[in-house]
Length: 204
Image (cartoon, rainbow, N blue to C red; front, side, top):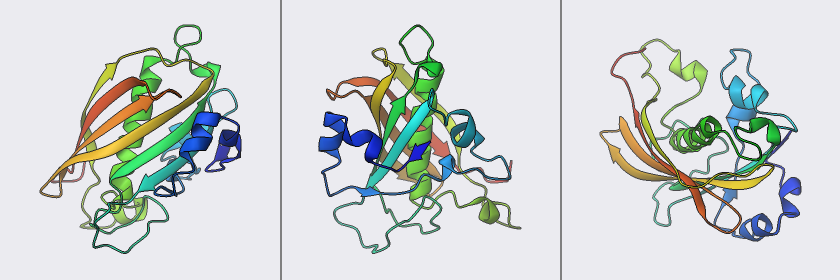
């Protein structure tokens, strides 16, 4: 299904308008790519169909005052500089993700918030690809300590949504607090979450 192809979104007026913001840069989502290790299979296979998440588009916005001149091509960057202060994902939702009729299942709502916050962390170089994480003496990758989610309004399906993630706090380069929200075409917040990621001191 369409990944980082803006075509499916151009016919959606509110998304088309947001895409004109040149402060955001489009990047590839690695979790939509099939891997032989089965890593990211949830988003690359299970949730990648015409009736689930038929299209997605990801963009980031770099900090206005940043010393880093790097431009990440994917969230596998190994730099420790903050390359992105905000990430946004556009999704087209299908009806096979429903809980109640015409309403996105609450578990999928939380999954999308977890994906967005985790991708922001990865984009800033705190995760690394599998080969880096599996190397001898390599630091373990961050894991979710909590994802405190508030379900404010039903997320209707089929339809399109915006999922945003923003870094709130970084401690000791091993704890990251990130905010995530899901909005509809009118900018109304449908769900929000605060995630805490920690880097274990030893491999799990």
